Length: 210
Image (cartoon, rainbow, N blue to C red; front, side):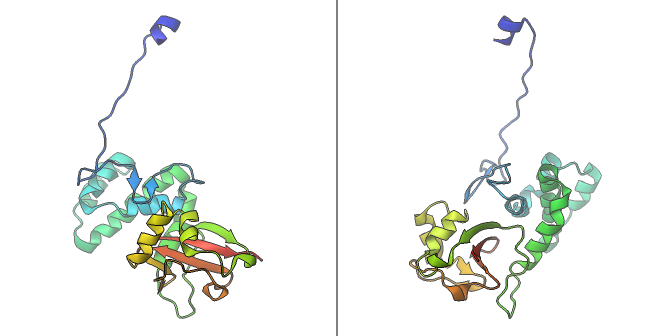
C-alpha cells in the first residue's frame, strides 16, 4: 500500500514469538495481561513479573530485555540455587527502569523487601508501590473481600477470588482469610490501611477514607 500511495520502498521487521522455558507465551500472568501503562499495571507489579522469572529463563531474558553488557550477564548466568535470585532482582530492576525510569526502583525494592516481613504491630512494611483502592467508613462491614481482591487486580473474577480464598492464598497481612463471604472490618486496618495479599508475592492496599 505504501508503495502504491507514496511510491516509496518500506521494510518490515519481524521477531520470533518469545516463549518461556516451559513453552508458554510471554506477556501474561495468572492475573492477566502485562500492561506497559502504569495506571493498568503498576511499576511494582511490573517489577514482580520479572522477579518471578523461572531460573532457566533468567540469562536469556537479561540478554533480551536489558542493556547489561554480555560479559556481566555471563557471570550472572553462573549463579545457582538461591543465589540466582540476585540475578532475577537485577533483571527486574533493569527491565523496570527502562520502562518506568530508575527513580522508582529504590521504592519498589523497599516494598518488596519489607512487605511480607512479619511485624508484631500488624503492619506490612512499606506499601507505597502497591495498587490501592479507597473504602469509605460507611462500607465497613459490608465490603466483601472477594470484591476488593477484584478491584485491586489480585483476581480476574469473583470466581477467581473465591478460588484464591478456598486455596488458602488470601490473607490480610499475615492472617489467612478462610470465609468466601468475609467482609472488611475496622479492626483489619492499621493506620488507615489494610493490606490484602494474594499468594506469596502479590498484594494491594485498601485505604480507609477519612
